[in-house]
Image (cartoon, rainbow, N blue to C red; front, side, top):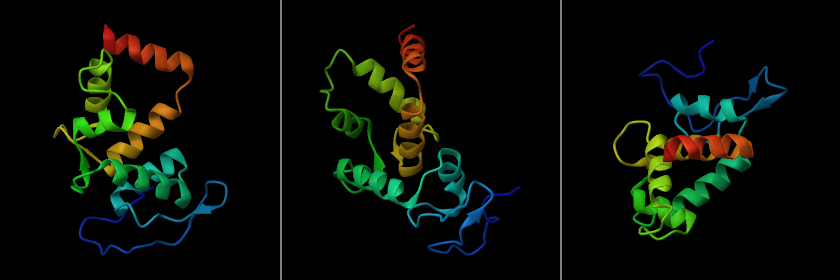
Length: 132
């Protein structure tokens, strides 16, 4: 089942509720149609998307629509010279889906939701993999 419109199809600010996942959700106007899979995968609602967008915009101090690695350090409140810098760098680059050295809003949503859905043991395993 296809979740997004084919290329070239018109984009609307809001689509009708989707059915089949315990009711329906509406696509937040913050994401392009092709990123609807992010919303469905993590079961994000409009209020979640608004909160994530608020954090993303607050940290995006230059209003470029993407985060640099330094902006990631701002989010976690660590100096660039921190002993945790290699871990933060690795997490940032794991989230950079296009390997462009920046995180867009979709990358940010996937990164935050993936990390927040992990158990303590899974986080420890991830940190071990990064440090190994």
